[in-house]
Amino acid sequence: PRSTLFPYTTLFRSPSESARESDTLALLEYGFAEFRLVTPVQAGAVLARVPINGSSSQTTPLVAASTFSHVLPRSTRIRVLVDAPKQLTGPLRAGAVVGSVVVLAAGRRLTSVPLRLLHAVPSPPAGMLAGLGPGGVTLLLLGLLLIIGGLLRMRRRERRQARPEPSRRPA
Image (cartoon, rainbow, N blue to C red; front, side, top):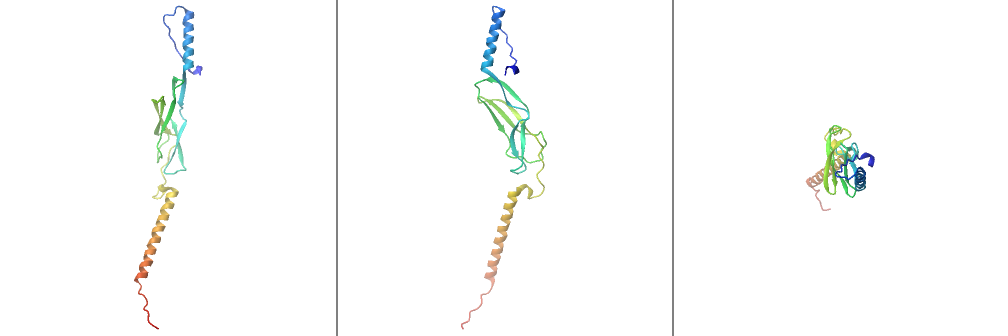
């Protein structure tokens, strides 16, 4: 929008004031027609959600630390690439930088903006099994049951083999 741009022009060697004004107007019209102000990253915008403490159901939002605006030709393609961790483990304080956002224009890097935690990430629950999550605990218990079942079966087989067979007498 024109209200957010503040162009400044200087024209030298104009034959008259009206010619200078006309040239300035033509230059401004060209600039507004061919260029635009883009804001691909806004401060505080949630750009990613990341699982915390090994849980797939608990996530925390990551927000842009600052706003980035730039004037570019209208035909320029803009890409925003988010570089965030796949998972976070606490404790982490709110506002901690944990990733970044890279802004590309026509494949060329314009800037990088830090990604911050919107909320603090608590420590994972205490205890040896807590870090496994509900699915991991279930798998661990099933594995233990299979091992115990196998050991009992082996013991039963050993007892059968150790028993003397009753002698058979002809009748």
